[in-house]
Length: 204
Picture 1 (tube, helix red, strand yellow):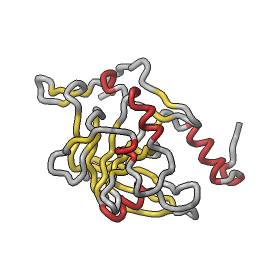
Picture 2 (cartoon, one colour):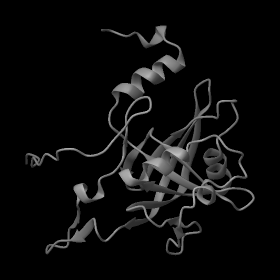
Picture 3 (cartoon, helix red, strand yellow):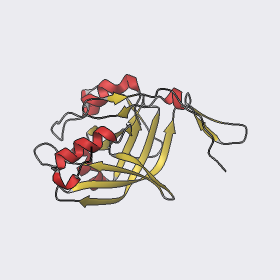
Picture 4 (tube, helix red, strand yellow):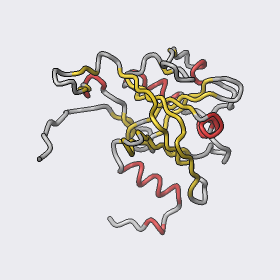
């Protein structure tokens, strides 16, 4: 099968890519709204892109009615956001937080999720997530006819649950991927978790 993307609508292109670029990490992003509420939503067009400066990238579209998503507005207007890596037992809450709600509604409060202070960062983190990145907006761009938002977040702090990470005798940080067991996004309504982990040293 050969697909010419020029012959597809944007929705058709999204379907092909999101069903084949697998698995994708999920950024479960917490922001603060204009009224002080904590907003929360998942995004899977997301990854790390640079170590100096330490940057993450997330692509944020619009709501079904064409208005801007709360996460997008909050990052652009208030700069700070927290990216979480969720576990499989948090899937229901993560999926529920994707619902389209009024901007003033806090998904964190509605879902009964606990938060905790994140060092001196102005936003808290979700207490039960094993990994969290405190980020500030390094750059913000809008691209394409639909004005998709591309956010580059500079990582200021990283939270790692002690159960998944330790320093070895050489002082090198080791993260237990199996213990982390991060949720991943597939196509349509499908998610995945880690299966077999393959160890293969990189050649010199």
